[in-house]
Image (tube, rainbow, N blue to C red; front, side, top):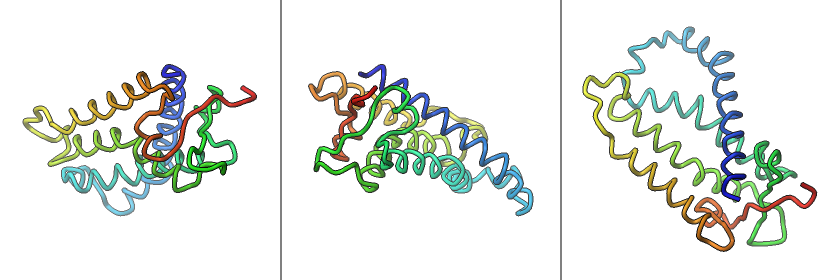
Length: 173
């Protein structure tokens, strides 16, 4: 199940990249130009984090949350691999609140990587970049989720434990 979950997540990461790239090209790059935002604006970690949040994090959180709370109870990657979410708190479908919480925890390492990259100043503008400890937290959280999936009999990772959900095989997959 771990490999199927990883492949599904990887497919969804491609969708996330397409959302990011599409928003960049269609909306944010032209908008930046109209607003007079140039490269020096991105020297600030706060500015870069805001831009990252608007162009990458928010669209991807919405994608994961809305698709997991949809009638399919699955992202495109999950559906492709024959997986869906199951609500362990009731016989009802996974709620938008549960899907949002699951997505928040699932994408927390990704967001922490953004924060580590962007603060105090963006890594690519830092004259002495060095190691940023928040990157270790990214690895620890990812490792914890993988360990939980591997060693728990119900194969629930941290996002599922927090949200009260379980990733299961679709019946007609």
